[in-house]
Amino acid sequence: MRLTILDRGHGFGTKALFALIRAASRQKILDVVKLVEYRPDFYGDPMSKVTQEAMRGASSWSVGDRELMAAFISKINQCEFCTKAHSAVADLAYGNKKVSAVVCDLESSGIDETLRATLLMLGKLTREHSVDVDDMRAVIAAGASLQQIEDALAVCFSFTLSDVWPILSASRCLPHRLSMPARNTFSRAATTEKGGCWPARLCGSINANRLVTRPKPRLVPICVHADWNSTAWAREPTEVAMSVFRTDPLNDAQPMLNECLGFIRESTDNQGADLRTGQSETS
Amino acid sequence: MANIEQARKALLRRVLERKGSASQSDRKAAFDKRGPAEPVSQLVDKVARSAPGITDEEINRVRQTGLSEVQIFEIVVCAAIGQACRQYEVAKAALEAVLRH
Image (cartoon, rainbow over the protein chains, first blue to last red):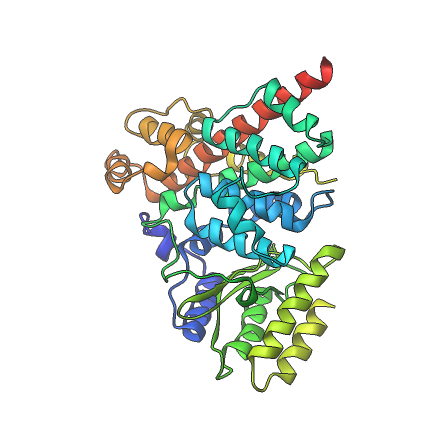
C-alpha cells in the first residue's frame, strides 16, 4: 500500500483476523480489505452502511441490475477488482454472461431499454461528473421511474467512492490473474448476522476455513466484510469468486445462495458438515 | 425503496464533524476540493478529477509536507467522498428540475 498505516496500522482484532485469513489462504490480504478495515469507525463502517442500502436495500432494480451498475461504473473508474467482482456476482444473479457483454459494449448488449438508458446516464455522470435535465429525460422516456433513478444514483454514489480505494494502493487489480466464470462464482453469507465486532468476523473466518481446508478444491477467503455479511472466496490460482450479498430478507438473493451451495456440492468431495453449516447460517 | 440518505449523512458527519487526525478545516477543505494547500490541494483535485492517475510521487510530495499518513488517509477519503457527493447532488438536482417542469 502507498500508506504504510494501511499495511500495519490496524487494531489487534483486525490483525488477528488478517493473520487467520493469511494462514488459511496463503494469500496476501487484499488492499481493498486493508482499507475498509483500517479505522473502520472513520470510513469502512459508515461507508458499508451506505453500500449495503444501495446494493441490497429494497428497490425495483434486482440485485443483478445493481451489481451490473456497480460493475459498469467501476469499469469507467478503471477499478479492475470491482469491475470483475461485481460482474461475476451480477452474472450469477442473472444466470448468464449478460454482464460481461454489457460492461464491454453497452450499445450492442441487447439489455432492457430502461436499464440501458439508466446505465448510459450513470456512465456520463461517472465520466463527466455531471448530467443534465436532458439526460434525465432520456432515462424517464425509457421507462425508468423516479425511484429507480434515485436508486441507481445511490449505487453510483457508492461506487464512485468505493472505486477510489486504488488511490491508496499500489495497483488496481487483484494479485492473481482473474477469471470469473459464473459457475465458479459463488456467494455465501458470513456468520455475522449481528455484524461488526471482530470476534464475529473471526468466527466467520473459522467457518470459512472448514471449506478452505477441504482438499479439493482449495477455496480461499479473499475478503471478510462484517457489515455486508459477506465473504469473498477464491479457488486459486485462477478462479476467483466474490460475494457481496445478504441472504435475508431479499427473495432474489436466495437463488444466488442456492447456486452457491450447489457449486460447493459439486466441487467438494466430502462436504456434508460444511454444507449443513452453510445452510443453517444462511437460512 | 433504497434510501441512502440517512447512511450518507452519517458518513458525512463522521468524516467531517467528528474527531480525526487531520484538522476539521483540512478535512472540509478536501471535501470541498479547495485545498488545504499545495501540494495537498493538487492531490485532492486529482482524487476528484482523475483518481486512477495518481502516482506514488504525488503521495510522497504530500508526505513531505509533514502530514502524517493518518492525516493523508483522512484527507484522501474526504476528497473522494466530496466528489461522490457533488456528482450525486448534481444528478439529483437534474432529476428534480425535470420533475418541476
